[in-house]
Image: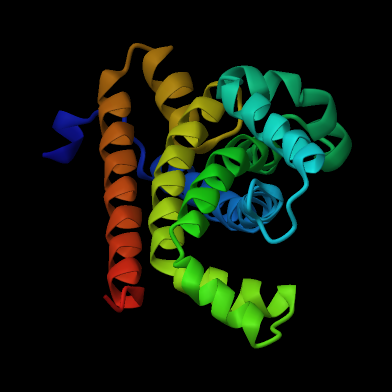
Length: 222
């Protein structure tokens, strides 16, 4: 029955493509979480009224974030080809997509981190300073814990964007469901393959959204 509806779909190809999509998404989400939090903290701490206010340094970081947020992802991949080849040794396959995925998503998430940190009650920060807390203590004991639900919601949104990025990366040979849909679906005019790949991507999005919402609700003590 399924073969009659989707005659060109091979389960082996689907499993491989789904694994590659999940691999690219999970690794890039981890990288984006790390670098995005660093960027967000730098923006927050060096911004106006920040604990380490520094207009010049803030301008540098903000410019980096704004520039990379403005570059369309498909163009960013092409721009990073020399860097990717130097770093990974190839410009094809799931590993080759990771630098562009992380560099493309980290500035976006960094801004979300900055917004989340600005929502932390200033009274709590001032109380920690009054008790003589160091900058590291304020960051890891006050800022990040207090903003955790918003940070989780932000990385969930970013993860969903990254799933879309992996599909675009697949068009230029990164592998995954995007690659399968384009190379073995669209180019061969086998739209049953395109349809099944689309359904699987939607299911992956729903899965990440469900997990993100569950974690966010668990962490939200309000």
